[in-house]
Length: 172
Image 1 (cartoon, rainbow, N blue to C red):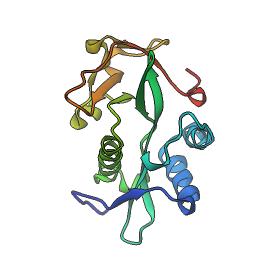
Image 2: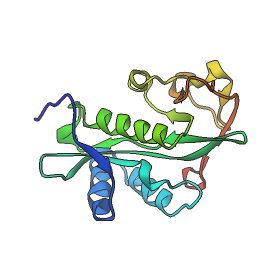
Image 3: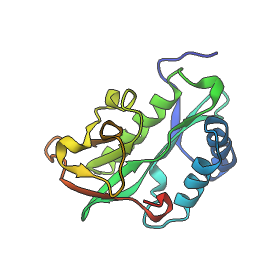
Image 4: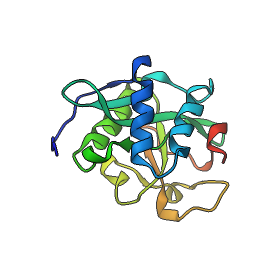
């Protein structure tokens, strides 16, 4: 197993599509997550190509993937962090964290302000995410309070309160 404090990252290219799908298929127990990423690619309102980031091995092959797509908090544009996936043999090596950090950095460069994630409460706080409910942010479905987290990429703009509206492929 390779352990690195930083993995090389880059924006996904068209040539990476099969490898990114393979990463998702290997990382998750069902094909739903890989199907979700594919569906988001075709959603013109959700897809932002510069925010689909891969962590790569020494041969520049994708081993991890992080994706930020468009959502809204009421009428305020925001991003949501879609499933983060890492090949099983590279999990717990920092590949996923590298991809997430690179995607968040790219979002900041695009002057995006807010990011929502529905995920593991022990993983995402390392990136600055906090409980969304503390900011008055909620979903239209019931989820554990600690699983819905939010982040502002611009300290000058506090998180808005409201209901998160995901892109249609999420089915929420």
